[in-house]
Image (cartoon, rainbow, N blue to C red; front, side, top):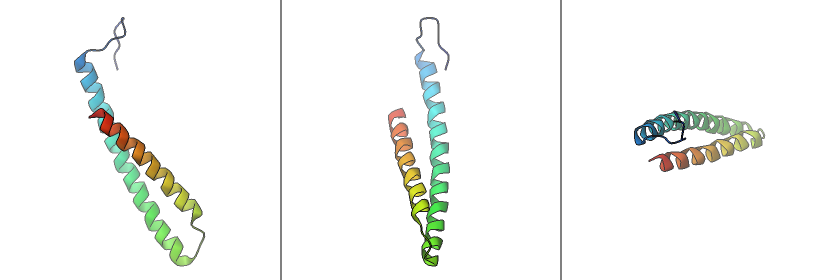
Length: 78
């Protein structure tokens, strides 16, 4: 983000920066969805084996919370 000496940015710079942030958030959302999918598959396997699944469930909850924040950011960027 380019700042002028009086710390204001043009509408064009703001729009460009918002688009850049949106693309980054969309990429991050996609990565998080992939991670969550992998965790949920692992969770299925772990539960079938009767092993303690607390750690994987905790990780999935963290990823879900992060996804909520990413989606909030995407909503605000639009």
